Length: 110
Image (cartoon, rainbow, N blue to C red):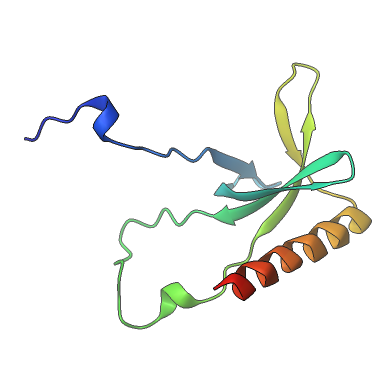
């Protein structure tokens, strides 16, 4: 087993966001990007596939499929903790537009 010094490794831990639906099913996401709109912050959440049976690196091209993202407004609750809530329809449209512009800028840079 190899020994590693703490400074030799860069580990980026993404916070996992757990969303629960009305039926108690849990869904796991990571924050792809935080988008400020006005004085509010919105998270673009990407699903985390927890299916361990799925083989990675298959040649079918499935990893290239578009992934549905979830847009959530980040509010602060009474305990000072960040909570994710559904945005209003107007907020959703504004964030979607800002996210699409961000993706277009990234594509133009490549």
